[in-house]
Amino acid sequence: MTETTDAANGKKSASNAGRALPKWEAGAQNRLRNAIRKYTKPLADLVARDANEGDTRLLVTDFLCEGLGFDKYEDLTTEYLVKGEFADYGVRIDKQPVAFIEVKRVTTKLSERHLRQVETYALNEGLEWVILTNGVCWQLYHLALSPGLPVQIDLALDVNLLSDGTIAHKASDLFFLTRESLKRKLVDELWKAKRATSPKSLAKMLCSESVADAIRRELRRTTGYNALGTEIVRLLKETVIRPDCL
Image (cartoon, rainbow, N blue to C red; front, side):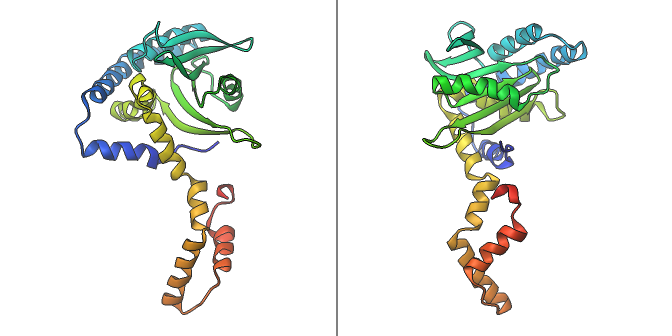
């Protein structure tokens, strides 16, 4: 799993700075900011008393509706049955399932074990998005399944409602989980930006023939040394690029 890059989130922030938001998007952002303000204290109280999972779900349900804009009866299905097991929530847009949500106790640290649990549900239903939350942290994962290859799971978004970040920044990030965003598939654009600028993607480009050739020409111009392209790629892999990005 990979970390969310600033480029993915920054793309939207930068675009917002230079344009007027559509009315529906401005409304969603305003609704999110109000919900974050409203639920910050109740969330902190739940953490302080180490509330159980049932109490956590009550708050999560309210936030899904008041903050993320889902209709409790039209868009959300609790205890969604998947091959004899139950996902905490199924999310539907226009009656079509788009994601599963797994809710954990408010003080539980979200982990890969929790992800594997909801990942199975998503794969069985053919869905590519899953959300993990304990009410405080909201994590969005993308699942990609290629024939003959293991399932690839990547973290697309990670927001902490009790972090020191501004309400506006949290709302801007969480916007991708709103009903409006999912309906318009804006979360897919977020994923495209993240995938394109991921460390592995950039490392692959750096090791490409065209980039190696450009480096070779620049080295010859500035130092007089005429390196081979294969030598440059080897040096990039051995001395410049982190091993986990290859």
